[in-house]
Length: 238
Image 1 (tube, rainbow, N blue to C red):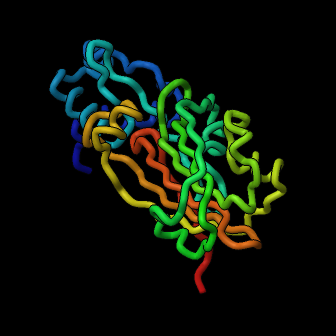
Image 2: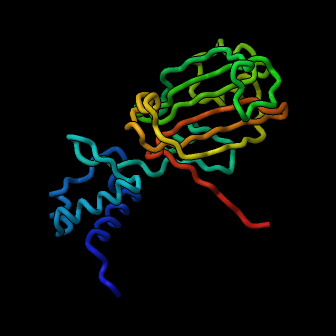
Image 3: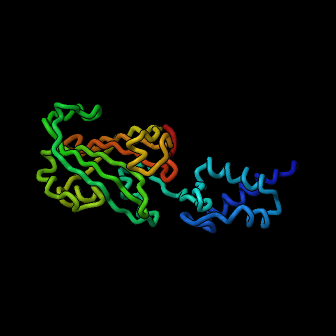
């Protein structure tokens, strides 16, 4: 068998330690000197391995601090209706909402493209920044049909999880949703809101959520790509 290059051996070992929790998310990786001594390789080899891990989303260099271990388990499965806010606590993240704004939005001005079947003249527009462990992870914008959630504007700040609140307060039963997920990048405004470098990768999710009364919510979400991922669960073939 061909010999495994040293940088690949270092890469696989560190990756395995991150995945198994030996190197916990949010902590700093051992220094280059410590890794050199442990693996018995040069600093060039260590840097080559850590560059691969950084490009793969496992590590993030922090100027003046070291190299931070990123969480790679934050995922959202796409075989059921679940929000970003619901998926994060399942991974032991503490969730908080910051910068919340709610207003009545006239659809005649600019109707969301995938909400065109709604004939109402206006909807509620909810805008929020969601934080996970004190770090901004998502900018969320939700449009809700006024007739299905009357007086919704009286509940500003009363919830963190929108879907759970709508189910409990308005007895809505979500039957399905359609998501369009694409790659995006942080423009100036998004980079400032999400504390992400200008041009850094984001995940963009456009969702229409339905009840038996038809579409009830249209949402746009921008997520920091290095902190979040989607999982598609597939079964069988026709």
